[in-house]
Length: 154
Image (cartoon, rainbow, N blue to C red):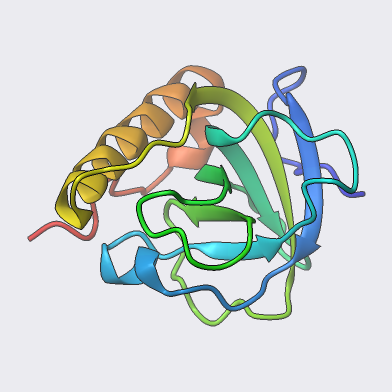
């Protein structure tokens, strides 16, 4: 399994590689497009479900992206199977379906939670994005080069 070349030494809690699959597109509607990877929670020892800061690298690309990873069942909009999904900060969010993606989980942020509305979820995702930018600033500042941490806000 490839290790993201942009990963700061000793920072990965868990590394996972898989193929990007079609999701519910909820992240895109909220301004947080994600790359979704189907996974079987029973297939191996996984870290606890929740939200992480990580580093992502697409197969065939040399650069890495700081990302927000959600692993679990997305309880606010629970239909569908468990997924690992990552919002790659600074990525153009072109069609990634079928591409290989390596995710390195670097910092556990919080457990999954049920939000009272999609707007409340979006507000939390803004805070998660800020946490990811802060982590990268301290641990992988090269990943922030030219990055607008809030590109989707009006």
